[in-house]
Length: 250
Image 1 (cartoon, rainbow, N blue to C red):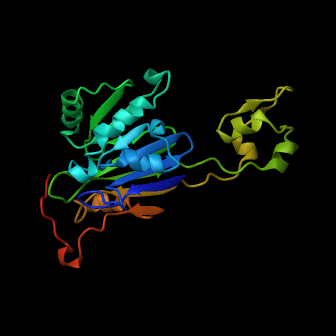
Image 2 (image 1 turned 135 degrees about the horizontal axis):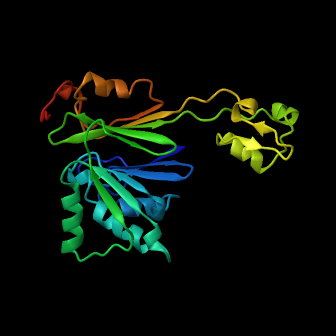
Image 3 (image 1 turned 90 degrees about the vertical axis):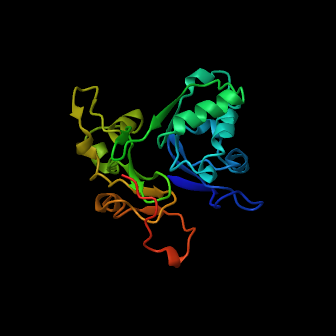
């Protein structure tokens, strides 16, 4: 699991710093959070590949978090390979995001070769797969803005090789099945359960990514980020703005 900062600049990109864009990557998953102007160029300078992005999360609709999205989608389309229809990108963000993407692509006559879906967010709605649960929560900003919590589900414990040998489990593919939580039946008919050879579950990790804000909108939202392993928070304003809640929205 790693995080790549493609851009951390505010308002507009500069020669030495890109506008807001962060990539969260783990085995089998590669997600982009915000897509400021120049993100497609920044990703080309990194070890990442645009075509590996499967989900895009937009914190809010200010240009320095959004203007790179149409161009980035076109880059993904160009790099989609011989079977672009097999690639699908889910895009999450505030109400208005679907219209922005549609109008940008329509006016520029840009045709994407891969399917995509836009999900306009409802706070506290969970988005889940086999590895992670992603939850959006509201932030105080001049326009609707979201923070995101990526909560990894508990992982299987480490394989006890000595215990596996005692239960006649041979090294190989069977180890992999047990690590994934599946029971296996040996040639002698003996059934081996993951709990027979695995240690205690490893607690999942938690990453919190906040967009522009002067605070969260509720105690419940703040609790979502408690005990996070990593917190990514914008730091644009100085202490004179501490505690401000301009642009409250419900």
